[in-house]
Length: 193
Image 1 (tube, rainbow, N blue to C red):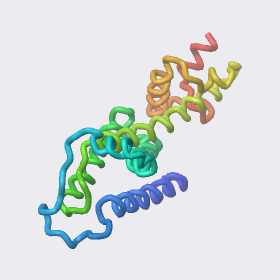
Image 2 (image 1 turned 30 degrees about the vertical axis):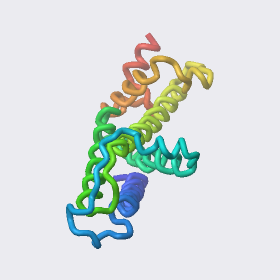
Image 3 (image 1 turned 120 degrees about the vertical axis):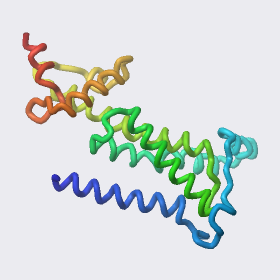
Image 4 (image 1 turned 180 degrees about the vertical axis):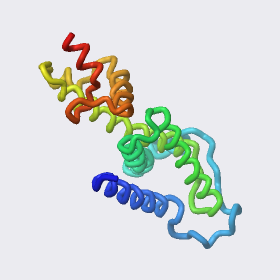
C-alpha cells in the first residue's frame, strides 16, 4: 500500500467516525431504551416544505445540503480506492451506509429515520464518486500525447461525458495505462494507426 493510499484510508476511517458521531452517537446516546424512542418518517421531502414556507432558509439548506455533503467524502474515497468500480455500485454503497445509520438512529432513539435522508445521502456518495471520475477523465484527456484540445473538450460537458468516465474507469481497472496517464494502450494504437 502506497503512503498516499495509507493516508487516504486513515482519513476515511476518521471521516466515518465523525459521521457516526454526528448521526448516531450524538448527545442523548445511551439514555434511551432500545427500539422505544426511535421514529421513522417515510414521507419524501415533506419535512422541508414548512421550512421553505416559513422562510427558515438556513435550516433548510443545513438539513438538505448537509445530508448530501456529509456523504460526498464517502463516494470520493470509494471511487479513489476503486471499489466498487461503477457509479451504480457506489450509489448502492452510499444507500447501504445511510440505511445502516438510519437504522441505528431508530434503534438508539438518537434521531428521526428519514426516507429523504436515504435519498440525499445516496446522492452525496454518488456525487463524490462522480467528482473523482470526472477528474480522472480530465486527466486522461489532457494526458493524451499528440492531441490538442481546448479546456472544454478536455473536461467540458458533452453528452457522452458519462460514457467516457465509465470507459476511463474500466481502462484504469484493467491497468491499461500509458506513462502513468489514464489513457489505454488500445486507444493509443488506434490514434496512431
